[in-house]
Amino acid sequence: MGLIHTEITIKNTRDVFKAEEGLIDEREIRQATIQAMVDTGASTLVINEELRQQLGLAVRAERQVTLANETKVKCLLTEPVEIHWKDRDTFCKAYVIPEAKEVLLGAIPLEDMDLIIDPKRQEITGAHGDEIILIAK
Image 1 (cartoon, rainbow, N blue to C red):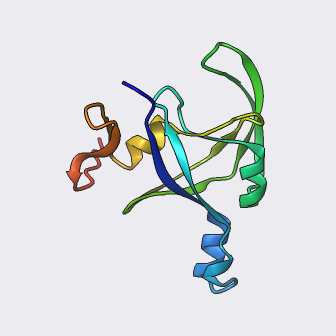
Image 2: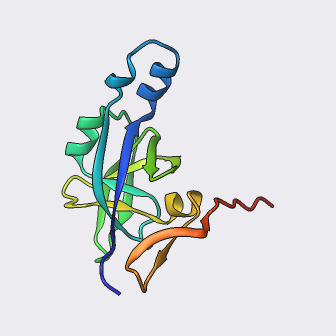
C-alpha cells in the first residue's frame, strides 16, 4: 500500500466560536485547506510551525514525542482545532513538529470521523459507508 493523501480543512476553533457568537464575521475564521498524509501510526493531527502561526493557534503545552524513526523531539501542543473532511468533522489538539514537511492526519481524528483506509482504492472512506456510526459503551 502506498502513501495516502486526502484534502482536509483545519479551522481555528476559537474563531469558529467567535463567529457563532457574532463577534467576528464568518469570513474572518482562520482556516487552511490542505492535502494531509493519512498516517494511522500518528495518534492525532501533526502540523508544522508555519501552519500553527497561519491559523493563529495558541500553544497549550510542550511534550516530548517519539517520531517514526525513533527520534525523540520536543513539540508544541495546540489548543483544539476543527478538522473537516467532506461532510464530517471533529475536534482535536494538534502536535506541532517544527520541521514537519507534511500535515499528518492520525488515528484519533480518523476514528472520530468514522473513517478507514480503503487499501484497494488508496483513499480514506467512511467505515460504514456514508452513514457515521459512533459506538459508545
